[in-house]
Length: 408
Image 1 (tube, rainbow, N blue to C red):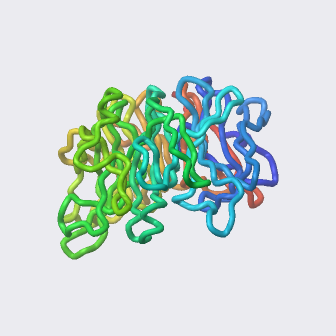
Image 2 (image 1 turned 135 degrees about the vertical axis):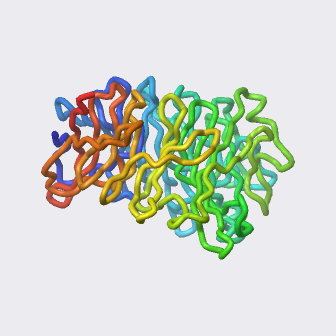
């Protein structure tokens, strides 16, 4: 294994799509941790030479982070906080946006309109953790709403959205914090503040992953009959043309002053897992993970406890059915994970080492030994050519980037 960054500062990988398409560069931000948002640059490091380049530098008091890369070209999307933050408007879940940098030009991905009547295709709050779909033609994100946050924080439910290249979208600009965006953006999940106990209703949608190019899986928080939170796996099927993305259902795409923006008419939300009666109900939130479909789109992987309470990898078909326990590790999966580009295995942290889990048998093969500190649980990411895997690990108190060969 090889340390590829060497500096008295932190280097933060996003949970997926952190490599350039040629598998030569790792892209990162410089936040001290995943929970803080004080970094001013988006950078990349060549894994062979150690050369570091600054891709983008924020100005006017703004901060940036959580960068991912387009699967076919050197196009970068990341979170951008507000310029000129003040006591009334500063970085928060509902005060951030996606921006795209390509060939030195940076543009807003999503538009914001917080003045009624709202603009279809614009958001009314903050988008974050932007991930390109496999063909690079759309971007998923999670979302929080400024309009409802101002009305009642309890109404600002996290949701999943998609940006598609059918813009630009330009609000009327009645508020100084509104802005235009290059893409048409809509929410694709449905939430409700008080899910009925035992129902398929959810009050939070998060940690999404693409299933092919026309579906997204995500975790949704249901309520048990006793009223306890049980995270379950959901999937939404998505429109395949511009008309479908722009056709509203019974509720407006742009939302109202009292309701969240609504999905397009054709978007169907379906629950895939039903775990309320298990000994350990629900998908786990620790370690934090993002659900991931294999490149073939035939299996969705997620983390759930087995009957002994140990966190394992599980698989389920996008069509539903019974989940299949993949791993049977003694002490559990310790991190977020990703599929190898071949779809034959998954990479994660097991026993404080970087490991490959066979996608059929669940057999664990260790790629590393003797870590100075345990690998971070936040990100274990394969290069597009499948030859390398990257992660974060503390060195002298600073989070550094590491890679090793996969031997695959």
